[in-house]
Image 1 (cartoon, one colour):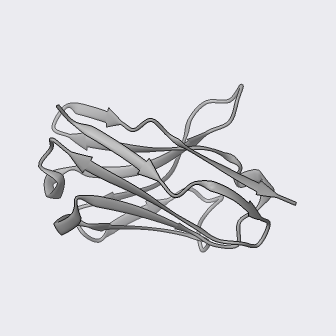
Image 2 (image 1 turned 60 degrees about the vertical axis):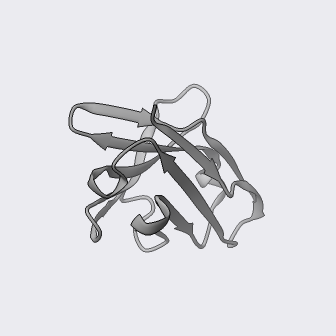
Image 3 (image 1 turned 45 degrees about the horizontal axis):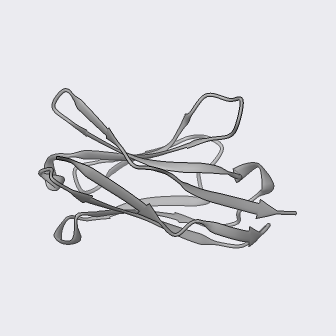
Length: 115
């Protein structure tokens, strides 16, 4: 059974940084495309960043230049380094894995950016 567990969320002041981690188990992690998404109440979940293989990455326009996604296949972990955080980055952040035709989601971690 695939399990994704996020950590690293919290409360930070605007301009600050956080690093989110997502540890995967039960999947061939190196073959799994990973991504981070976020959701605020009343809005659709949106894609923040994704990584395919070891180095092919993509970002939402709203986070380009501020967020960095990376992965460590030896640790079955994907990271999201978030710098220059803004109040509008406040959301629950979810880790997602995609392998073949299956998607897997973590439980989410809250990120709150105060102004």
